[in-house]
Length: 404
Image (tube, rainbow, N blue to C red):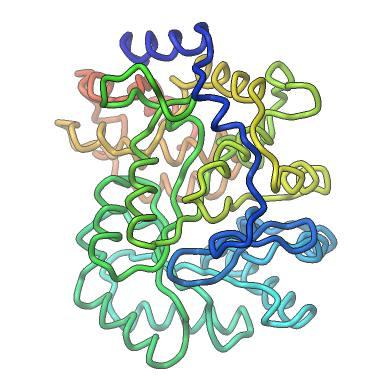
């Protein structure tokens, strides 16, 4: 973490909380309005111009929980499931298909994704989507997404647009979207401004804190304004729905973070509350692999972030932020050796944070030797340009050892 940013963080962590904090701690108002509805114990938010009302906590399908947990989450109001053709070799989609038969197709919304890999073309995408529909045992998708869009030029590629249009005419999906893991500033901006996509699934968590570009003594929330937040605001202005992912950072590996607990609230719950207090976010998609995790996540619905919880979050970011890669892609774009640093660190996140060994090693194996740390000349440019002070060189070398 560079010195100026660390000074910024310390100033607000150790200093007195701004009076503007209290405005952010107000509980969500239960109003009869279009953007938010309540039914039983679940709150639902409008997913942009799709006009779908999806649960504030959604279920991630990589992996899905055991059947009993899966069913209870749905019974308690979770109505959006995120999946992909690649999750669990298609078994995630098959499990959702089983759910449709058990509870009814209209009880749950599903978004599934396809990759743009290799020399993809129209026929390739159509084949992938048809196979997803077969596994899901349904005639249509609520949302069809590009999986991990990283090149903004792909979003308006004539072949892709023609494919989406054909599938739309065939009634294979209702709304278009994409997920984005890297190069988000260009990808999200393009997706919103081209006007073609209805929703975006975007990594967003408290580690996206960065110093505001505006020189002012008043901040709209205690954690500052991040670049991701400005992208979310841009999407909101254009009525593009936003689903937040990667919110818990450590995902399925729920580490022992008792040092950051505030009374009965865990750090994970505070992380979820922080994201959900942004009313431009429709939902948080997260994995709930145990009953304990399900209870932990669903209990934050409708809850505001308390002052002490915000302070605990900020302390966690201050103490651990330098180890978290934001996948912004700045290091990779500036590497003179053309090393795929962002892709490498993404693999390392899957290995260390999510314990998805096979996925991490599989993705790493697709990199060419000259795209890895083997060809790093140790110039340090990656670390000098990193906005977050991540030890990029150290991490790509760790990845070379752990993933080969």
